[in-house]
Amino acid sequence: MSGSKVSGSVNFTEENGETTSLPLVSGSVGPQVIDIRKLYAQTGHFTYDPGFTSTASCDSAITYIDGDEGVLMHRGYKIEELASESDFMDVCYLLLKGELPNAEEKDKFTHDITYHTMVHEQLIQLFRGFRRDAHPMAIMVGVVGALSAFYHDSTDITDAHQRMVASYRLIAKMPTIAAMAYKYSVGQPFIYPKNDLSYAENFLHMTFSVPAENYKMSPTIARAMDRIFILHADHEQNASTSTVRLAGSSGANPFACIAAGIACLWGPAHGGANEAVLAMLEEIGTVDRVQEFIAKAKDKSDPFRLMGFGHRVYKNYDPRAKVMAETCHEVLEELGMKDEPMLKLAMELERIALEDEYFIEKKLFPNVDFYSGIILKALGFPTSMFTVLFAVARTVGWVAQWNEMMEDPGQKIGRPRQLYTGPAERPFVPLNKR
Picture 1 (cartoon, rainbow, N blue to C red):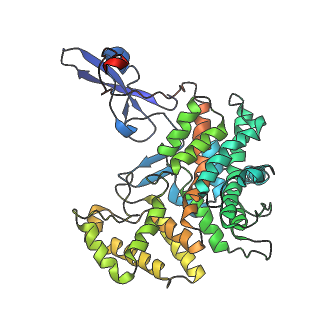
Picture 2 (cartoon, one colour):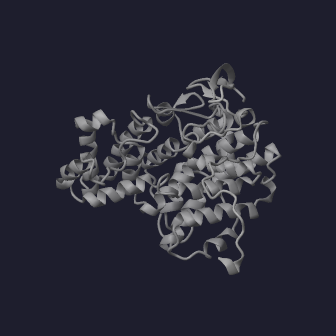
Picture 3 (tube, helix red, strand yellow):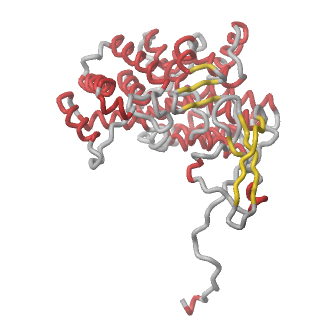
């Protein structure tokens, strides 16, 4: 395992008295892990870990999370600093190449991404094959998977140059495809990318501009969009990233791997959390009902749950939430929407969660999904586009993880084992005797 070292061993004794010793491995930071790769060969036993929540499926130098302490770092840099001091192109370069770029490197990288933003014109025909009411994520899965049919010169996974070209293409074209999915769903003409705009500006322009008039770009809104992309760029070995790695382990081309990641992200337990926040706000309805639903949330016998509070990984505070909270208030101020009913309701929920002893004791603080849902709603995105935006941001994390796996000499095809609970061997019964 690259970047790791054996720091000891763990011994366990079976019922028959036999003792097995397994290596204890340390990374650069975080808990030690027990290397169980030879467990079956040595003992004849597998481990049982549904969801792989106690199993490291790989070693990685990209992202580190400490959920208990509320820490998220990319290549050693804290997410709060990256979101406040850098832009999305900085973070993309960092995730892909391991270091923050200098001015010359950043200019070249930004240029290379910018000049890959257009998509093949024949893809327009593919969009028109979908029904008008198709979910944008269904379109994203289909179109991104189809990119391998258009860009044959970047599908050879054994060629490092082709892998990087595919990575650049995916990062560059994802906002274009996402904006086209939105435009198709609302019956508006596709808007082509503009090379004089930043990554976030370009996405907003392609999504919300129309040929009939010039789109007025707000620096505050563009910066908010850029931060949303940064805060969702990578999140270690989550479900969609693991899906990308698993697909990639078979040798599938990069476009197919990212399409698999998008399909996984579509699941409401993964990428749909900010949609759930909006659904909850609609259920509560008005500010005067907030206390009623706070009481329901505290009642263990009541099925109602406050969405956007707490996090399955962060047991303390979501480190992305503070930056997103500041951004949320900046956006609402810019748009003059602080008095909009649903947003007033959200702000009241935020106030209570930050002051109420129950929430403080349980560490049920607002997370990044709570604030991003409010921002996207304020910007005019329909809820069906929320997960699409997540996919745009996460693409760089997916391709960084995929590239890391491709360069790992110890990489193997993913093949989890199982605990079989079906019937034992039994005799076949002919049809006339069943």
